[in-house]
Image (cartoon, rainbow, N blue to C red; front, side, top):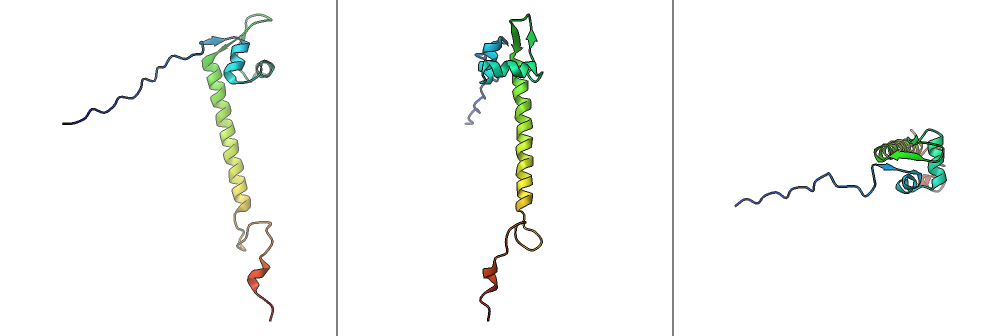
Length: 111
């Protein structure tokens, strides 16, 4: 008797967030303050639409893409920083990390 494999959960889970959001909702979604969210929009870093002088509208998919882009950029920066630190701590041809003082104790007592 063969057992049936369990089926994965469907990937189409309804979101608790609407497809479009105002400034307050977008700020909550991004876990930022209202002013910080508006500043990102004003600098052109955060995609959104100004319907009039009072109302901004943000699409959830655009906010998700913004988060994914920032995540990728920060991940690459951290990886580059880690590689630079690793290179700085790699042993030099003399066998010790660059900038490290030699271990004089390994030479023993003078005779």
